[in-house]
Image (tube, rainbow, N blue to C red; front, side, top):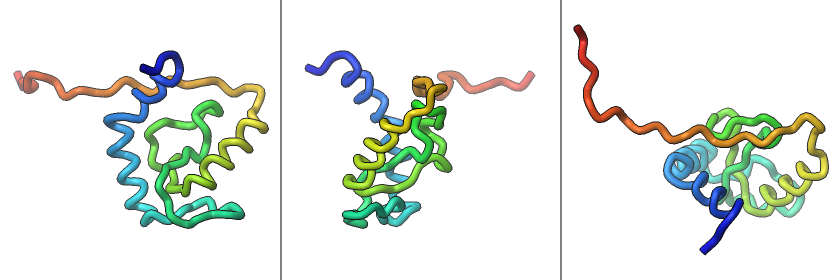
Length: 106
């Protein structure tokens, strides 16, 4: 069983993330939008354009793009080297559950 940050990270990438990830891949037609040298062009991951640690939004489609594994991992390594001094880690918003009872109009 995983513990610590790996356990927390895996919980973030379930549920709502899976739905949004699929929508982004379909929107970008499973084509890598980064295209670094060595790109495979076959997008299987979704990249945050503005990293979460830099203030980017977790689930905002305008902050997400389809990426191949090669480009996504290389871009992540570049971003870690150039992390701004004011960067903070954001926690994802809690999942929203539909209310159990319908609202009443009085």
